[in-house]
Length: 283
Image 1: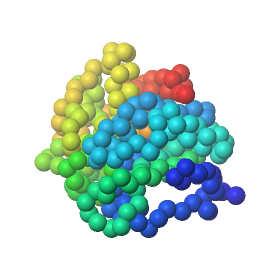
Image 2: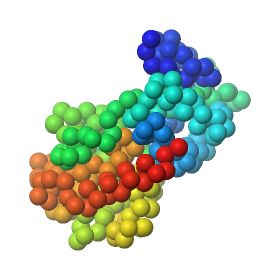
Image 3: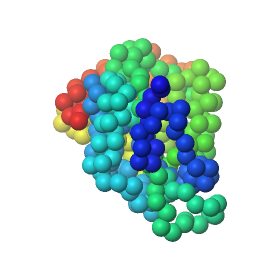
């Protein structure tokens, strides 16, 4: 027996999980997804993930497959059945099964699939030492605010970073950093945290949203604006956020040491704050 996964209304062993070859997620990448972190068997930032999911579905005119309450229950049941302590729950919703035509089919039931992934989130070597990243051109489409399952450009960029021994890639467009291949990008300049404003050019990160709320409560100054990779090279600190890494310090960009080459005080403190709040608010 492997993991228990959820496929279109049923909990099944992962070896028995099947989707149709006519599923539009398979044919067109026509769907959206969310990854929600799990700490101590509890979902972290569940409500903001549901709100972003609702927005992505609305932008693509895809119907909800169930109620929000039922979706949360699917997450909890997967956590229970797989005895998950730390890690995440991946879920995706596709437009459904229909013969291959580009236009949206009418009255097609949407398809929900979900599974758990166990991984260490708290006591990681990367969080202690910081990570290295590299920059690269942003080759993605223009609606990056939608959390689409069509991730080929991100996978290609992530592979480029891996080939250079880097943890993550920062994507560059018109001379400015957009975001990481699967994360939000930040630098610390003159003691202020700098991150790009939300727009169609970037995904509205849930971890970003919650971290900025905690920063406001603790008095850390925020400067929402564009920044270049050259500015990042000279930053006091740099870090990234995502649901699977929380707040991750960056110590090297394109072979250039950032700050003192070790996690800086702002990134360390923000990671502490985020984890403290995550323990309090998990459901």
